[in-house]
Length: 514
Ligand code: KIV
Ligand code: ZN
Image: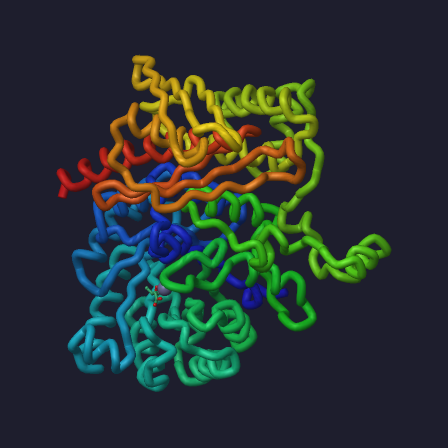
């Protein structure tokens, strides 16, 4: 397969993905995700929109300064101040890319930009030239391209190539396109842009009609060589093209798609879990590739077929995406070294300090649980991922509940260096626990979302709790896992309260520096 057949995977989870309502990530979380994207071996990471806020600027700079082995892109409108901010954030990167965008559709030109086509074209060319003076790696996106006059897009693309753009992105910004039509448009571009050989043709599809992946695949089969996508399909409104779906479609159907990606697919599942944990956006169970049911076989006929020959009902091997569900991991007698090996096989790498904490949590849980599965270990790892400086720490929790008992909780917390305790009653034991915690911490936050799920089967399974809280217009998530679901809920609530403190500090720091 020649270089021409290699699809460039441009991951925009940290930029377009973060535009998903409620999916914000802090600087450490973004950095951690960027490290995972490097392991996944995507080609480009779009780290953010530097001019949007000081926080965004810092995240992009942090990733560009420290992450290697991947191109780091920063988004910019066609304004000099955006391009300056993008370059300032990116300039220490190994191969930084400035990603410019300006709409080409008449709807956007008339109502949003209040420009005519000629003005748009001039601004695009001027901005690309300005960016190209900083770096030779410049991408230009024709926002709302799929609803634009195609000959005008060709004219703009030809002009920006001559101005120095090396990647031309054709976004389906509103998720309006249909696969055949979208494929034909991409083919038209290849045939009608005289200098097309000097640039890579890219697509960026939104999922409003559920067609983002189908449109991206149609584009590849018609000449696109970069796909912009996000983990779990996260993104504005109905989201973006799901990275895992495009990559696995290419891998599973070489007979239909004579292209390849450089993605190490075994890192797909851990990365999906990481994104869902840090954004607090659960993956729907029937989601292709990474959903909990994606490899579950329920009907007797299917199970029978699977037992006889896996390929009767499975087109992909779960191990290829790094899924090792149901694998018994080590028991309570296992050593630190064996645990470290297992963690690494699962796609995580921890510092010694993190490994020590995970090891002692693992021992605690293994002590009460008969069998420890990969999923149990993963829940412990996710707690570690969301760990943040803890002002509030759970010391002890006792609850009383039952059919004829007023649910009561007694909570003992460490707040900084002080130990405090409080009892409360509630509608149920979790409500009572949360009331006691709220009393002790003085929080005025509102609980927006609460979910509890079982990590594995069986009554001895660990419970995993996810909460989302809101205070003064800020929203954070919290997560906790424990064989006792009320303790898991208390941990999740405290994790959210600790993250809220962090977010408030960050927000006021960024407002001051503004
Ligand atoms: O959807 C879109 O058009 C975008 C551009 C900035 C590429 O996200
Ligand atoms: Zn987008």
